[in-house]
Image (cartoon, rainbow over all chains, first blue to last red):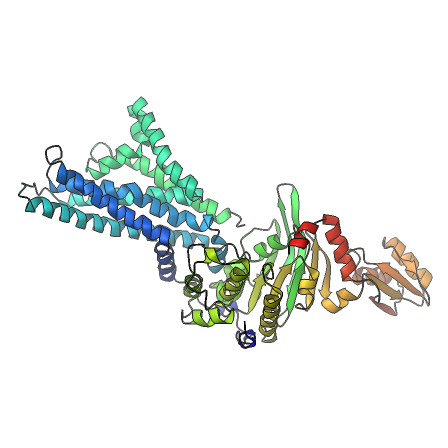
Length: 262
Length: 305
């Protein structure tokens, strides 16, 4: 520390300037900042690399087991979807929880006291990441299909808009479930554990009682979304979206606004 | 300018902050002094909207903090230097703060230099010492060129040289018209830094005023041409006193529970004229504060700091 830095000017303060003179933080800026926070740490980058690796890894299944797995564009794409859905929700959980675990909310909520806007930005960033990941999954699928075609396999090009929409919705819903756990629980470890444990518990419930299970087991209903089986399942799908996404996100927003930050 | 009115908060049935009213003027440094657990941090958190008061209000430049459209352009806040993302570098931490404030990220290098962290800028904050985190936190508060600084125990972890450095920085900030509110649990730490002091104990303000006055005395001297009348007035107001020479009375302020205003009002009520009402010359804040800290028996913290 030199004496020069001691006397460096801070700012000639204009005592007349009211706080209102500075415009509100635009949402685009919150988005940019939250995008940076979600992707700029070593942990986040490792996790994103693992998401990519697991997607590529699962694509090997239809490539190496052609006799057991349908050699169609759709089945390849669904392997990409499953690959993405394993770890990508963890990225979104951490996007929502890491500021609580690292206690940086103490800073963030003094930068933007309208806490809901910050959470909205984090949710949007998660969904943008999910969209990007879906595109990545599409590219991995194309590469997998390319390799399969190069080895001379017959591939059924049965892709249509419905399949693509189902694929995108499935990825978004997986991520949204992670977002919901993170938004509600504010704790990385608890959110990750419950994200994996609770659906298993509900799937077991579903096995015990199929009629009840299909209303609460998102594993089953999200598979219907992925496979485009909306017919006859729409109410159950919507019920699980409300239970696993809408309700926890809403409760999480209320909790975030009310919570005392220590 | 920071103003709080009767801020009050309980956690469960435990009152944490009771009727705390503060007023910090531009151009001044206010020290918020009290033993650990006295309610300083909770008060600061209520001012910046992180905790919600049960009663009372607080404003920055006349507006509640949470209504400031872009708060870091008005208020720099450092509440806990350990609340930083361990995986981010010092530079990245400041860049985020600059982006949020809408400031150019070119400012980051200047700030790193200002707080003496240029060499450590690209190391992860997880490897920083507490003193380095304090410096980074100070830089973060200055990102938005605010006119108000709110700092919770900013001297924690700083060496004497660092404390002297911060003293210069805050003095400079206040001399340019800025308002500073900082907390501390050590009197000697803030004595050379602040202009005003607010002493808090068990959630309530027990003394406040310009540092020079508070250091002067823990009792008040009252003079009247009508000593019998004043004695009556003080008794009926329930204020204890000791008669002194030359028609004077000495009134113990009882940790701030007795104020000059109360004595003046008691005299007015009984229509007793006063010719003098001021801090007496003996005693001192040091004793007051020692009695407060002794009461909470927090010696281990003191020794550690």
